[in-house]
Image (cartoon, rainbow, N blue to C red; front, side, top):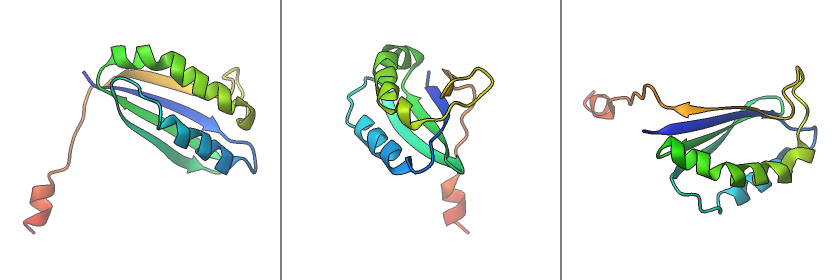
Length: 108
């Protein structure tokens, strides 16, 4: 069953390009089951990293590599406050996935 990991982080002022460069290198990692990897800018210096995995066990196996990548960028990240540290991570199995019917749009 498809799994996702979602991590919120905020980059220090003036460090966004360096943050993106480190994450571009992450693409070169060969991790079993990784289908897609996105970085979404959600606000001023605020980002969400999203990974899509074939199954939860693949995500779990890749955690050491993901932590190593995070370790490379910790100095670029601000503490999120409230005892969260520099990231707020979430992961789990997909419960619902809907796709738009693109064939209906092309028929219009």
